[in-house]
Image (cartoon, rainbow, N blue to C red; front, side, top):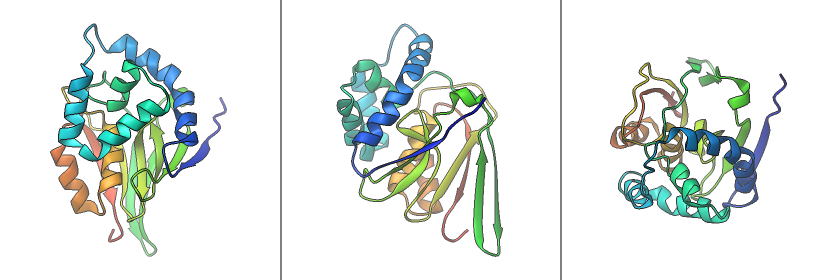
Length: 204
């Protein structure tokens, strides 16, 4: 099959975000509603967990939902709080050559599941660019400070209470400048599954 990738840019939550949502929500909605179970997480719990663990994204969450006139299911999904179990795969490599650090990630899942969108944003005043995952989240990316992140499956299929990793990836790129900042952030945020995160910054 052929897969066409696109790149979008959004300094504020606007047309590019609409395009990402319109492209992704129908598929994600079906996935979410068929797997979440009979008792959806109350929205007040989603907000409380965002405020506790990723306070810098609470306002963005509100804006993501309101910008697309989202209902409660949209709000729950975009909070990424305790989602259904994700598929597991992908591979990556990192090395340093005479021109500096290099981080490469490969998408190993069915191409039909790939949102195929490279999104550049400045939603919090500085540039973040990465591959869209779960519409508001990222599977890999880089920020203006030179911090780059890439994720792969961590080896365990069990899941627990916590955030879906794509939103954690975005939060770290939105708020951290280097590897030390990123490590502290990842350690402080509960993830609902296990992952390997590779990080590089300007120092290597």
